[in-house]
Structures are given as structure tokens and as C-alpha cells.
Length: 522
Image 1 (cartoon, rainbow, N blue to C red):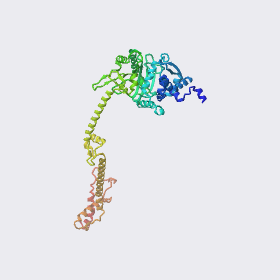
Image 2: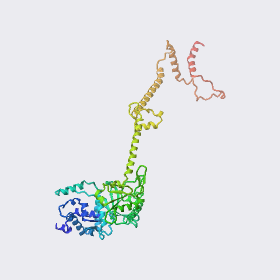
Image 3: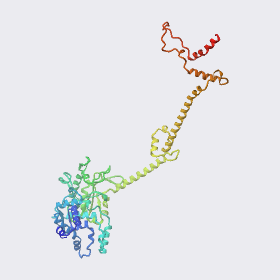
Image 4: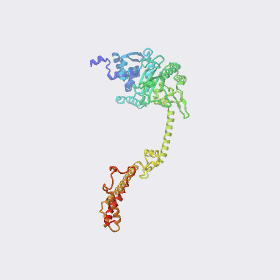
């Protein structure tokens, strides 16, 4: 325990030092009160029985002040002077900023720069930036850590927990972020802008929001000139890892792709804190008039504006932001005539509503067309089921006369085609059997015994004809048919035609009748 005290004289825990490191890593400059409200909001509802507000603040911030002192002992933070109200300001050293980058899981280039003259001028501008971040986050207290506190304190904590949510968490914010119109992110060129706050909270429908804080001390023309730098930065393009030129800001922050018909730059929020002598309302009106070329859109007949190539500029006061929060009517979009929640102010609800109506009309029209199309869908003549889309398309694309069964669905057509193929196969089989039967009939006739002259009766003539055919089919002896190989007779005239050879049937007749003629003496 003694060793721990030597390392951390104030006796802070690792969690407390980590809280201080992370808050200062994001805000760069902060008081113990701001660190406590962001990292341990439940402490705001403790020590409520102290006599004065100063004593209550001292009690609830004691642990974080001790953690900041221990970080100073490690060389990670330094004292940055005091605010105009006398509160001590804490800053991170270069080593502390590097340690905070590890805790926040950010590379050094994403940490942003240090505010100028924070400890010498009372840190009025950094304090407004910090209060803007706190008002946007609206940290919720953990009610479980308030057990045993007075009923009034618990009720106040319950009201804070039930209030509308803020936007994002501490890690959703970055401060003093360079927006280079020339040079690099790390070394921006002259004329580059520097955003007081950059908010990335896609889970809250705020993918990217740039925020500028003003204490009503700057001239409106100087504020308006910042938007010329913003416009140059938004138009700057750089080759991304895919080899395609993209707006430089898209290579660092992930946002939804643009609409095909509208490319709107990221929105910018102006937060005015009534510290200086210039009225916030007058400042807002002047800045709106001087920046008209950057934010003014074009009106469409459907009752909405399109902002292609424009910068949505929204303004509010720190007082309204604290009172209503991001979900309340605290924001005025330049060009509109009413206050609205932040999401509506940075968006285009009229266009969204008009497009929603068009999509609804398109949906209804498609439903009517689909119903009419369904009414024309053919029905299978066999099973009665409706044609599928593929079957209907196939039938429509083919020549109707060439489709074998255009009135049947796919299943019935398959069965019908199978039946046709089977019928065709059966037909071919019958034809083959008939052909074989016709070829086998003469063979059976030849194989039956010949009747000859003994045949009598009505079948005698048929038997004789079959017998003649049988004899005709048998080859005759070679002696009756001269061979083609027989040499020519030496005494025969070669110019005369060869002797006529009788037909085989005549030779057979002569062969059968000549013996009878010889025996009869003819």
C-alpha cells in the first residue's frame, strides 16, 4: 500500500486516471468539474447535503482532481491555468496525448491539435466547446450507484435518466480537427479550416457533423469566412485506396453514399454562447445572410428543396441546447422559418416525405399492375393450377403452334410429354412386329410339303404356284447356265452377238418336258 501511495500520491485508481486521460484526450482542455460530469455523472447527485454549491462541487470532483494530479506526477498532464471563474484547467502533455490515443484507439493524426492560448486567455472558447459536447451527449447517471442518497437527489437523478437521450458517447467526438484545403491531415496548408468539434455517431443517425462554437465575440464576417474554407475542403478530392478520386473527407469518415440526384456536403452546426456583447440572435441572422451562397437550395414543385452541392448550416445557442437537448426544438436550419430537432434540421424531412409519397404511389401502382397481371395468368386445363412465372414466360416466348401442350402447366406438360413418348414407342413397336410378321409368312409357306400332281381340290392351284416359286428359288445346274469364265470358241465369229440364253423358268420347263417328249416319240 505504501508503494502505491508513492506512485500515485493522491491515491487515485486506474479507472479514475483512465477517465481523466480519455476526457482530456478528446477535449484537450477541461476542468475537474467537466471531467466528472462526463465520466461519472452519478457524482453530480451526491454530496447534496453540503451547505454551498462550491462545497458540493469540491466534494464531487475531489477524486478526479486527485487523478489529474497523479497524471501530472507521471508527466502526462500539466496545469493549464484557470478559467475566468477561477477553476483550474488541466492539459495533456505530448506523452499524455499519445497515452490517450491508445486508450481511445485512435492514431495520433486523429487526436486533433491543442487549442491555442488555452491557459493564457481564461480558456473561454475551450470551455464553450466542452459544454457543447456535454450538452449533446447528456450523460445519464447510474441509479444503482446512488443507493442511500436523499430522496430529492434520487428523484433528480431519475429525471435526468428519463430525459431524452443525447447523441453519441465521448468517443464519438473529436476536437480541434484540421480540415486541409492543401497539404495533409497532419500538416495542413495555409488557408485550411479547423473544426472545433467533429461528431461521428451513425448509431444516432448522425454519420458526420462539424460543429463550430462561438462566444459572441467574433465578427459575423469572420465566422462566415470559415464556410469558404469548409466549401474548399469539401470540394477537395483525393485518390482513395481503390484508385478512384473521392472527396478527401470521405477517405477519413464513413458516411452513406450520395443520392443519384443530390450530393449534399456534411452539415455544420453553429453553437453561440452569450458571453460577448454581440447578441446571439443578431449574430445568427448576419451569418445566415453572409453564407447564403453556401446553404441556399432550389425549391421543387412538390413543396421541398434540394440542396445539391450545398452545405446544410444549422444554428442554436448553448442555452437552448442545454434546455432541450438534441431531440428538442432548439435548432434553426438556415433558410427555414422554425426551430426543430437536430436530426430534422440537418436532414430534409420535406423531401423525405415527398419521396415517401412517391414511393407509396409507386407501390400502389405496382400492386394494381400485379393484380391485373395475375388476373390474366393462364390456368392449367388439366389440374386447374395457375401457371408459374417461368411457365408463362416460356409459353409467351415460343410459337404457340410449336408448343406441344401450351394449355398445361409444367408438371402436367411433363406427364403429357412422357405419355406422348410412350405412345410413340408403342406405335413403333407394333409397326416393327407387323413388319417381322410379313417377312416370316413366305418362309412358313416354303417350309410346307409340296402337293405336286397329287394335289386336288380348291388348294391345288395355290400349291402348284408355291411349288413353282420354290423351284424357281433353287439354283439350276451349272451345265444349263454358261459361266462367264468360258473362253470364246475359236471358230465362232466374235463380232456376232453371243447366243441367246433362255430364262431360268423356260430352262426349267424344258428340263421337265423334254424327257416326256422323247418317251412319247415326239
